[in-house]
Image (cartoon, rainbow, N blue to C red; front, side, top):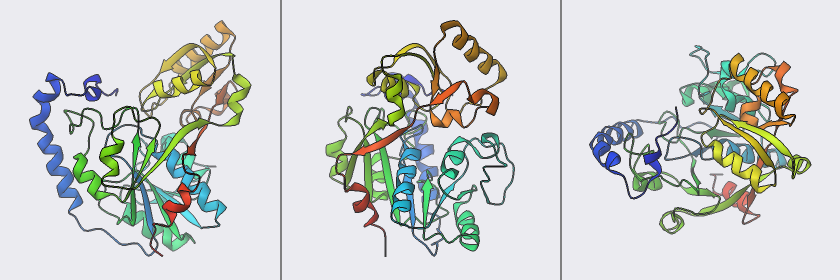
Length: 326
């Protein structure tokens, strides 16, 4: 489902104001959940989360943390609920890339599992306990789950997209917030701010938290598409962000196809993409999240264009990991 446009309009629109009384329900539920007791795991837990619904770059940040752990020889594992997975398994389980598909575990879990052991489960505390029994991990990295109370987070980190910020600053359903801004800022220990500050949030956040700024940068393979025509498609929180990044890297987009976040591609979708590919005789490009969901026989027609974070301060990751308890 696409987020309503009024969520991003600040000051809030009349529609947002009319819905504001219902936001008290969201506020009550979030406070109730966060007041529940949490399990303290025997190893530190680092959580990448956000205050809003939709994509802010949590998975990209989690992967950056994972790569840093590998560079520093820190054994770690990812914990995630496997959003949009079709599997009905209630007990926590580890992703098996030879057996599981995106339908089984979700697209984000497949990406994470390519880097390190990744545990799926709605209850992060139970997942952590299962992982501890079978894994030598000295750190857990949570992709999302900032408002999930089951597992104590030693280092909860807020991820903010500089373009969308906190939307209209209203809670669901009047806006995109899962919890109030002030409560959220008091709930975390640091902020990773991605991209240009188009909503003027940096002064507000910096009065509460240490901020680490970064920009999204396309990986080198995109250079081979510079000044070439392509067809781009994406089923992520903000497809337009992906498309704009391609344009910024001098790709010529003859077609842009947006699908809902975490979209499951149907045979009709794939057929349409192939028809466009043959009609325009140009490459098809997409995001890694979308690529992992495609059938193997279709992947040969697609090029995933990956991104990484370029930190304003090259020592950002070192400074973030120094915040973890020893």
